[in-house]
Image (cartoon, rainbow, N blue to C red; front, side, top):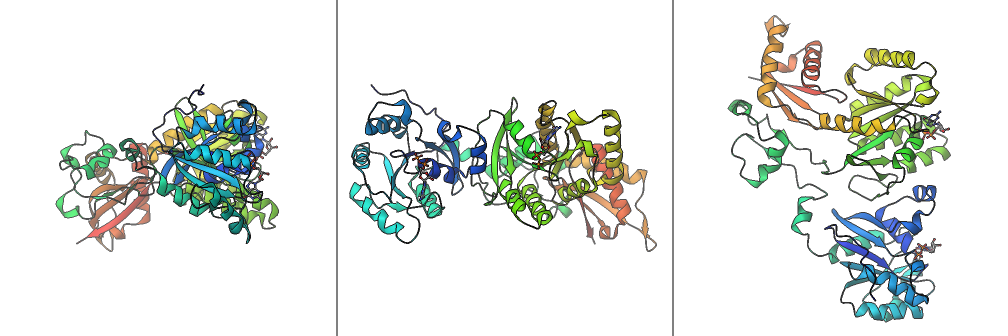
Length: 503
Ligand code: GDP
Ligand code: GDP
């Protein structure tokens, strides 16, 4: 009797890792999804219980299944267990990675399983693991005898040959389905879209239409004279789908505690995705409103602990994390108030153009909450005007109290970070702002500001056009930025304003 299918349909191409116990399937799985040992080790039972993850192979999201650990539940001989467990998954795979141990050589169980696999009419890749070092490749060649093609020598543990393997898997995958194409993991090249309100029946303007909303009015048309420059540019680094965030803050603020808290019982998926580097991983967290990826630079932080230049390393971990994130949660130890270093990190977040949510952690240990909150708000008002209005969430990562407020605040901030103000509305505001407070004289002549448009989101970026606009004093520029922020609710995100002179 055939076991029930174990793999619910997801529309993603499926890669299954099979092989006898102990050849290194789990290690390979971890390597391919990029899951960190440190995180795995923190969660007992993870390696055995979680068999499914996602990997990105040449820009394509694939589902990866590790059959290790399924053995225990199956019939009672080694081959029987191996086969029964793997059978379910193998029959639903697009590509099977059949793993053998190059160091111990081919065993009868490998041969049996290979013979069975050959009959299944699946795309099988023979992976000779534990083939590190000089002798590795030679040992791997023995596996030729299995009749499953040329063995691919890798060392899952040492990371050798993994890039080549990933690329070969990508080659072996079936062509993307239509559904898959619509959720591409990496966007195609940057699109420059001129005169956005013209007919949007062309496919290349579709994504723009969804960005601006269907109800954009004709007054949003960019006047001819600015049309070449007033172009809304989509951010090519934008990864559609999941929001990516990071927890940053000084050592001991409670970042790890918070990460564990929001992870809770959730499944972790991490991967060598575009943008992630060797020392960072992305961990999936979710609440009732959906999923968010948290970038974790634990690798860098760990290095910091063994490095003498701790300050320097933890700074680079912070910078790394916030470069990878869209919205950054600045975690502070509320029992210590808002420290100058916290403000420095906030300025770094602003400089990098990220959205920011301020997390007041250890709220359980704060004696006078009213006074603490007031002191922090006052400090923000005076010392962090460039992030005015940012969301502040107080909670205890340790007890969990209040933590559920965090993700909604993060989402609201992400929405603002991504938002676009319609041009018509923007210019109505602009005219009123100029009336209220005329641009100053510069060397005896009044500057003529004529037009404003948003050229980018992520973060919101505006351009003001006008005669000698580039000479506008900083003070007036700040007046405009503050006005934009207040009038359009651009809080908790940097607001960029560029000035462009016209003849
Ligand atoms: P599974 O039972 O097939 O999932 O195998 P595991 O991933 O649990 O690995 C079994 C053992 O092989 C572990 O002790 C691993 O550390 C070790 N191992 C995995 N990959 C390699 C490798 O590339 N080289 C060496 N030398 N050992 C490895
Ligand atoms: P990290 O260095 O920012 O990752 O900080 P950790 O998560 O390692 O936490 C540092 C210390 O603060 C640990 O002793 C935690 O137990 C403690 N801690 C973290 N969150 C809270 C909290 O919400 N309340 C209290 N009272 N202690 C906390």
